Image: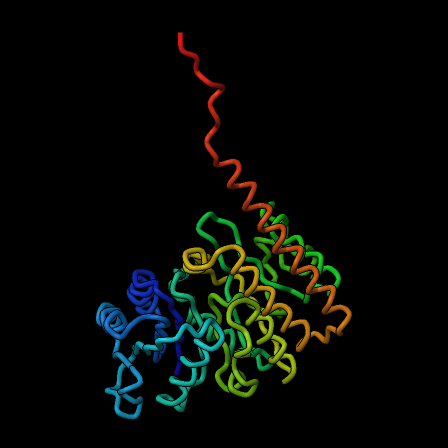
Amino acid sequence: MLGIVVVTYKSFDDTVAFVKQVLPKVGIPYRAVIVDLGNDVDTAAALAAACGAALVTEDNQSSRLTPSSLYLLHVQENLGYARGNNRGAEFLFEICPGLKWLLFSNNDVELVNPDAIDVLVRRLEEMPDAAAVGPRIMRLDGSEECQVLRPLPLVRAMAYNAFFPILNRFGSREQGCILPAGSTYNGACYWLRGCFFIAKADDFRQVGMFDPATFLYWEEAILAERFRRIGRCEYFVPEVSITHYAGKTTEKFLTASSFARHDQQSLRHYYRDYRGMGACRLLLFDVSGVVRLALIRLLDMLRGWRKRPARSGGRSRAG
């Protein structure tokens, strides 16, 4: 049995589209849960009705639910990516004890290969040391979200963290640490993109699921480290592709500064607790985060200055 977890935050239309376009292409038995964060109960009920899902609230416990292939779990608090996905996984483990695989997916994706999920599950079962598998991920503009092949060295990580606003603006990537776009490499990688991947349910439970200490970003890298600690790997499956309409929700609700703060907090947690960064390097890393926020504010000021209307050439004179 496949479990499918989709965490959504105030993105009604994307969630309905996911249910209508992606779920019908699942060729194996499944149970899916939409974890709806931050909405009131009435909005959650409307979303459940639009998706054809059984609504689950704090008042109707899972033991009393009518059996369904699709549930909508209403959570009034915005738990973020890690805790939201954990809540969905816990719900599926409770209602479906024989769960074998878990698909974690954003709601803003489409399958390029109609049999993508079935192929990924098959590949996952073919590799005993694999804890998770993920597809090639394409953006709407035709570019690719490349998979991470190895961890970024600490010194380069600090430089990249400090100058991310500029490097990202010009399309710079962690050279040597990611697979290049279009790569046909078919094997183990360091970590998979969190917008769409399938994990073995037993391995996911064994490592304690996602680290709840993060709110947004770097959850996948932390999960990869947890899998490595039990001798498991993650595998890239390039013959399977999806399209990801990246950043639609975060761009709507997060400013550049808020994004940087969440990213910095999660990245610091990752390097401190999972990559062994000591106190001195952590201090330098914190400084790099301050530089990053300063650059963001500077770029925002420059963008605002460019958008200002031009002044008139001078005063008009009478007569």
